[in-house]
Length: 224
Image 1 (cartoon, rainbow, N blue to C red):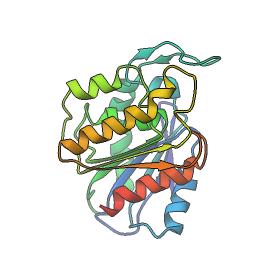
Image 2 (cartoon, rainbow, N blue to C red):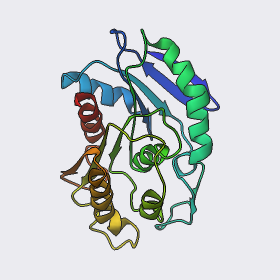
Image 3 (cartoon, helix red, strand yellow):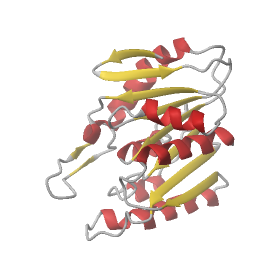
């Protein structure tokens, strides 16, 4: 593993021993990349390089546009996704890929919660990722469904993975209760465009088995 820091973001690169393999970029809330990789290896996943990014300004870096707080004691989302994506593409990706052997077979992007929203949003801003996994993605986010239906991806992805906890929509929160309906509609929208997609409903709430669910999404991308 190699670690470095760029503009306060902590990057951990877990390089593959084999050349010419995929690279998955995983934006994390608490630096859980190592735990996710252990689960993937224990499950016998195909060889790949994992690049995990942590110490993110979560409600800024992962949010595509500004929204006010959506639940009690929460801060606003301040819409810094475009700036962070620019940093990721122009500085983090080139530095991380100095550590790999051979060339990059393909790049994927993955994330949980707001990072799952960011993974999907990034496909509309850049063509460097050809696969994406959104685990318990914040697809309740105001305006995201309308954005998806009115904008064009920079490239048609090879495949898209979506998952959600079975209890996540069981809330009185006006925004959060739309998450399952939105996720299912968005997955169906992409499937209707001929993109290989899957939607996985997992037992539990938003916080149950986050690392395990993340590993499952990445494994699905690698198996395509």
